[in-house]
Amino acid sequence: MEHRSVPPAASLKEAASVGIGWRHPHYGEVLETLPALAFLEVHSENFFGAGGAALAVLEQGRAHYPVSLHGVGLGLGSVAGIDPWHLERLAILVQRIEPMLVSDHACFARAPLSGQSMPVHAADLLPIPFSREALAVLCRNVEQVQERLRRPLLVENLSSYIPCPGQEMGEAQFLGELARRSGCRLLLDVNNLYVNARNAALRGEEADPLAAVRRTIDALDPAHVGEIHLAGHAEVAQAGVRMLIDDHGSRVCEEVWTLYVHARARLGRVPTLIEWDTEVPALSVLLDEATRAAALVSSLPETVCT
Image (cartoon, rainbow, N blue to C red; front, side, top):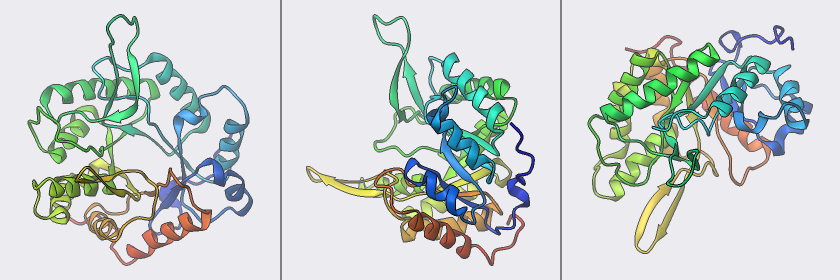
C-alpha cells in the first residue's frame, strides 16, 4: 500500500508535534473531521489480524496521518524471550503501515509455568529490576525485535506500585545503558515518572516528587529520547493505603504539565502523545489536551537545551 503522500512527522508544521491515542470510539469522527494533529498512535496488537474492519480503518487513518504503533504485549524484559508469533505479526503490520515510530515497554510479561510446555503471558506490564542481569535480558530481546523489524524500537519506562528488589542502578542510568547497548530509543512517559515518585513519597521514601522526576529527566541523554507520553492517573485509598494508579482515564494533572515543560526544554522537539485508554471521553477533550501540550511549549527553542 502506498503512503508516500503523507509527510514525515519532522516536516509537519505543528510546532509541538502532538498526537493522540486513536481509540475505537473516535475512529469515525477522526476520519470525518481530520483534526489538525501531527500523528495518531494505536495499540499494535489490535491490528494483528490479516484483514478485517480494524485494519481497514487503520489504513484509512494512515492515508491522512503518520501513525505510531505502540505495543503492550512483547514483554521485552521477559527471561522467557520474545514470542515468535507476536513478533512476526508485528513485523507484518510494520511493513504494511510503515509507521513513524514503533514502541513497547520495559517490562516482563512471559514466564515459564510448571507443567506447561509454553510460557504463559501475564497480560500485564510487570516491572523489572534495574539490575545488570535484567538489563542484559532486555537488551537481548530489544535487539531481536529490532533485527526483525529492521528499525530502532522505542522502549517506554514503566509505572510500578511497590519497590522492586534487586536494584543496582537508578532508572535513568538503566534506560541510558539500554539505549547505548541496544541502539534503541526511549519513549519517556512523564506521567509514569510522576506516579512512581508520588507513590515513593506516599511511602515516605521521597521528599519532593517533582524534584525527583526532574533529576531523572535531566540524567537522560536527549539524543536517546524519541517520544513523550502524557496521561492522567487516579489516586486510590484502601485499607489505609494511598497510591496513584496509572489508569490513563483522566486529564493530565497540573504537576505533570509542569514536568512536561521541563522535559521539552531539556529534550527539545520530541513527538508528544496524549494517552487516554479508560473512560474515553469525547474527541474534543483529547484535542483540548493536545492543544494545551502545543501551547505550553510553543515559546521554547527548537534546539535541545544542554
